Length: 237
Image (cartoon, rainbow, N blue to C red; front, side):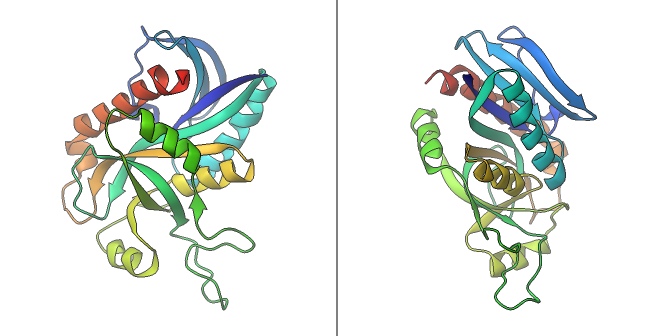
């Protein structure tokens, strides 16, 4: 079977694909807004899979699992998974800053009524979901500038300023928040596939302005830049 990288993005509007440099080979499946494609990048001369997983934990878990088996039926074995996309920050970062994720936690899982459970911990499951150290190292070595590791909380909700104190009190060194990461890492780890997450700051929880909308051109440009790096530089190494 041919090994291939799977790039995961939540929504199609988060990226603009250069059709002159990325040749569409196949539309593998489409389920509402969840869509899986096969492309060939003409710069690197390498094929890659692109999944739009949808928003939220259930969508991301379902779509990633389904993609792995759908690609296998096409004769492809996923070598690694890389998720890119916008993220909220509980710190005063610059819009467009990019980070690699080291650990992810479920923010909206609460079994703390049971003795010994931490916020975010499911029965008979890990508490923190850890990305691939070797894949993160490879990305860091190839990335055109230094990229820091950060931790993230995931929940099926919009995060607001009032969540910052709870996150700081109950989680260790978490500074980013989103709706997909922990589920993606959980599924990848269960299936023993290396995964890295590259997140681009699009929102600041401590600010009143909706930067996701007002500064969309900044963070979206960085998402496109990361996508270009992955498809032209990373997948050929």
